[in-house]
Amino acid sequence: MALTIGSKPRSLLVAALATFSLFWSDALRAQETKPLPSYVIQQFGTPPAVPQGPLSRELQAAVKTAFIDSMTQSTWGRDQELALNTIQESNDPRLAWIISDLMRFVSSNRLNRVLSGTASQLLGKQLPSGNHWQTLTDHLIAWDIPAPPQYLQAKRAIFTNVVPGWDKIFVEGDIDWRLVSWGGVLIDDRPYNMTDELCNCIPAADNPEVSSAAAATWLKDSDIVFGIEVNGEYRAYPRRIMEVREMVNDTLGGRNLGIPYCTLCGAAQAYFTDQLPAGVQRPVLRTSGLLIRSNKVMYDVNTFSVFDTFLGKAVTGPLHQRGLKLKQASVVTTDWGTWKRAHPQTTVLVEALALGRDFDFRNGRDAGGPIFPVGDVDPRLPVHEDVIGVVTASGRPVAFQRSKAFVALQNGGQIAYENVRLKLDAGGIKAVDANGSDLGSHQAFWFAWSQFHPRTALWSQ
Image 1: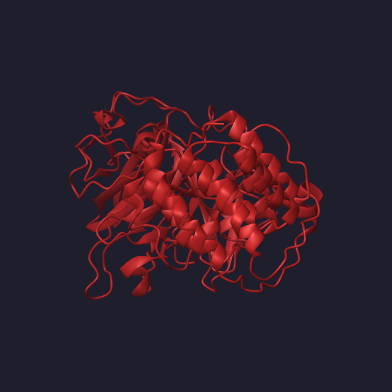
Image 2: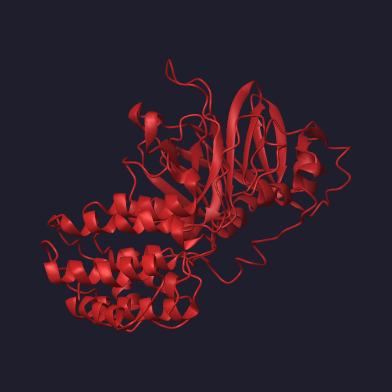
């Protein structure tokens, strides 16, 4: 069987796979098993037992033959079949993580089925047919199967030999590398203010051109926009543009902003990227091409520090070492007609920034649910239910079901949770404190908010 991994020439992956021998030679640290929620067991079944300790020499040799030799020799014969049998008989689910990483770049249907069958044996469960990689990864995440020691070293070798631009991304930090997967696009590593240059990536926009509301005749009143206000200045970021750009570095109301939009999570956020600790340069946010549980992984192109997109904190690199966490401004999700009537002085991004494209991922590509692995999802709300999320003064995250909150506010009701007060704003909802000060809220799908805030409170009427 010839092995095909993406469109990258096989020779570029030889070095990556050779590092696996180091991976398997290290002893595995003992890890405690945390009890899983009952809904995880109901959906995914009972997780397999996870052995501890190093791999046997026989198993190390089998891994080398099945995964390394077959790749370097571009062949699949009796030796590989025997080695794969040895791996299957080990019943060690930890090996399934490396299978998942390899499967993400495998384009051969036959090889995918072979690897999926091996993973099924390791997990003690016949994985459903379909998207083998997504199904496998969902189980690994939901069951919280531990990764072996030196996992980052092995994963880094695979990913950076497929996309060399990731070499500064895959470094130690406060990030769970098991959850990182490829989103199918390349890294945007263009320098600041060079975003007019073409790239084979999701192209961020720096200092985008804007127009008045009156001049934006290309927008329909029903078009969705993300509205932001800073120091009395208003700007609308049309979803049509943000679905193409996914990242904007802008200045509004005298403040610098980094504005990521994750199409997969239905979440636009606005981070202040100024007034930072002494010696910290303004982060210029870019799309890495990577995902964590179907949420985009953003990074600073100046330092290659990775940020947790939902939390705004640096998790790798120099900015992580400085403990940087960005503050948020509220983003109001509404329609253009209502926003411009409420804020007639608003500016809006110009049509040219959409690059001639007109996507609607929410009602098209993503309508059936997450298209990348997310693992388990808190069952208190449907996966794609819209929520307004904010963190209280005590540090507790809270989510408000948008549909119910909107009706309650329209009917004159008051919605409060600790210091948080919800208010209607131009057809959308934002969170303020008792004095009306902005608390940095935004809208998102429930699956995304709840997985990045796993202990979130959920407001109920």
